[in-house]
View 1 (tube, rainbow, N blue to C red):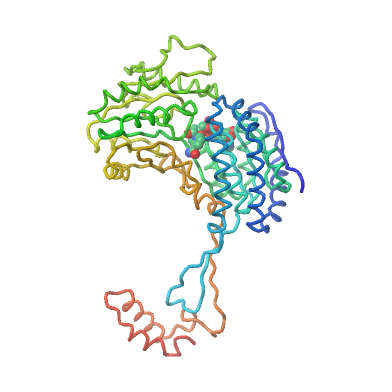
View 2: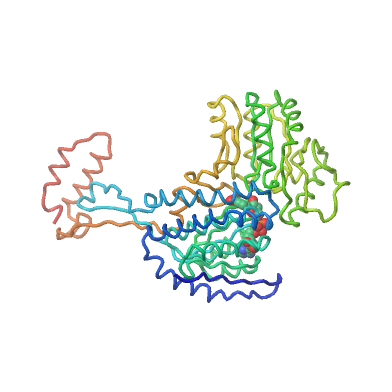
Amino acid sequence: MVGLGFILVREERGRESAVDVNLLYSQARRSFGVWKDTSLSERLDYLRALRYVMVESVDEIVDVIQKSTGKVAFEALTAEVLTVIDTIAYWEKEAHKILGIRKVPTPLLLQRRRSWIEFKPRGVVLVISPWNYPFQLTAIPMLAAVVAGNTVIVKPSEVTPEIGGLLARLIEKAGFPEDVVQIIDGDGDVGAALVSGKPDFIFFTGSVRTGKEIQKTAAEHLIPTVLELGGKDAMIVLDDAPLERSVNGALWGAFTNCGQVCMSTERLYVQKGIYESFSEKLVSALQHVTMGEMTSAAQVQIVRDQIEDALEKGARLLVGVPPSQWEEDSMEIRPTVLVNVNEDMAIWHEETFGPVVPLIPFESEKEVVESVNGSPFGLSASVWSQDLKRGKKLAEQLDAGSININDVMITVANPHLPFGGVKASGLGRYHGCEGLRVFCHETAFMASKGTRRTELNWYPYTEEKYDFVLSVLENIFGRKKRWGRIIKKAVNPRIWQ
Ligand code: NAD
């Protein structure tokens, strides 16, 4: 077993990329030549070894994630490490079912053939990931690609550069063969250079702006992509919602990971009948919130700008620190709840990605559905009601890739469920079956024993054949089923010879 190709590139933005893209791709293609022929069981053995290494290194992993992001240890453990380990265990159990040969029926006119689907790896996959859950959002697509038989080039975010090294060490300890995974440290220019290197598939998680840039280059070379982009998730609290649970759910949905979650609750709609009691309870329950620091200084500025913009346009701080008391250069933003927000404010329609949530009263279900679906984003949403039927009916009207009822964000933690957005929140899905199959070419097979001299659809095109196909069309696909007529025609040997 040999080591891992880990290339460390540190450079200033604007300088020519120092990454030897051609070398990386030639190494990845060479290793693909071997890796694609390993059996799924063999590949899962490496994953199992990695799972054990992760469990044994859990303190180190949590420590590196914490130092790199500023998040609290509990969130690093649950939302990053546990999620990855649980997903690996899911593949160990389900991958054979998901990627195994799938037999499918063959239509009557194509009789005496068998049909099936095989899932073949795409080749070299490029994974580009963000900084908010840098461990989980790098490891899961990277390992899914590997399970499916691809080799991977991975570029984690430059904002959390320690994560690449951490993953490289873990993979090396698990004994992965050389160059099956190559992790590159670098910024957006490095990412762009890697995209131009023409991978066979790109899996990108990050902002809409970068997603569009990647998609443009990918389109030039017809490279398929999955884009997991931003969100502006709504939580809808109906007047019969379990009140305390909804309040606690709202706090976690808005403030976990300092609100730096693509599926954060960024619009909190509360039905008018319970609006007052909900907001009172929300304010008093805030004492239970535990938050770390923001990860990126640039993101602190974006969040501050949105709060200032909202306050200038008439919003009010129900909870939070007013701009006059903000400390320059601080990475801390206290939990913030805004009221009196309206559509003229950036906070209404732009992603915030910080611990700020607008509290919005609404009257009718129709009104709230229109408002929620008016967003350009559609990643996830939640509906809260003690009447599950009512909650489900409302949930089904929302434009979002995933929806929770009486819970928030948690679909993403179930590896059996697909994950991804609609509208500006992204293209494609991962997790669940799709999370492995998306890294494959779905190849269609059909086989005949080859004992017949010719086939119905081949030459010569005789009148008998025409008559027979017409009869099938009318009698099988039409209103009346007259099998007798078809059988009579089908026994005519001239049709099949
Ligand atoms: P970003 O788009 O700035 O950067 C993401 C990654 O892309 C980084 O690794 C970066 O170096 C790289 N990159 C930047 N420019 C590039 C280019 N031109 N070509 C190739 N790569 C390039 O995003 P971010 O600030 O790191 O992450 C925050 C965003 O990610 C938010 O919008 C958030 O909603 C989104 N996000 C989405 C999901 C999801 O699953 N839908 C999950 C987490 C975060």
